[in-house]
Image (cartoon, rainbow, N blue to C red; front, side, top):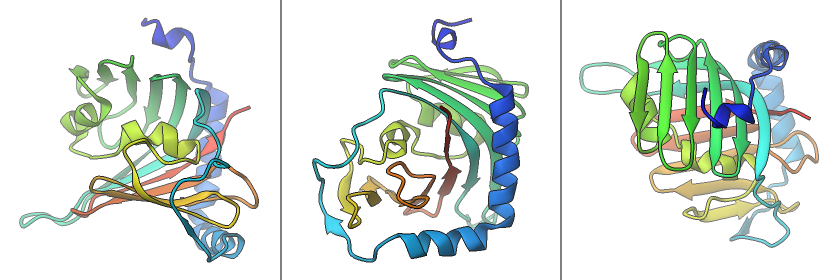
Amino acid sequence: MSTLRSFYKPNKLALFAAMSAAMVITSGCQSMKSANATNQPSTTIQGQNPEQPKKLESFNITGKIGVTTAASDTTGAQGGSAFYAWGQQNDRFAIELIGALGIGKTNIEYNGQSATLVSEKTGTLNAADPETLLKKATGWQAPISQMPYWISGRPAPSDSAPQLDAQNRLISSVNGEWRASFSYKGNDKLPNKISAVQSQGNKVVMTIDHQK
């Protein structure tokens, strides 16, 4: 067991709660969408703002992640989803996935320098960064390195064109080929949903429940 695991032990009750909550979110996605639209002011502010929340140095979150790949000349768009529990401490993180995008129960760890993935189907895989590792194991693409900033409700350092709402909350940001949009519950400062779309057609949707 790595030193990373010592600070994060997946809470199975929390993960089960996330699965139940995500099912409710999925079944009620239309009402959730309209509620977010009502709560979110239409006026946006271009650029960063000192009143934005600071990046969370540590957090524990659960939820559901869905991934859709772009259609190709030979295949149509494909999708998969998984329930997750994510523990973060500074630049290190551990993610546990259940129903993981076609490769079974999966654990991903990043120690700030290299990433490791272990699943029932692939065994142990290693890569320099989590994005390369996920694509190597599943064929899916996701902006994992930017997520700790986005989960904190602020742009990643390499982001461009961030837009804020009237409450100084991040509502959209661009990172390379990825454009992310953010939804909030009521007046919360941290997003409860992140949707990221790549110019090539890949898409990631992530619901977020912060554990106390």
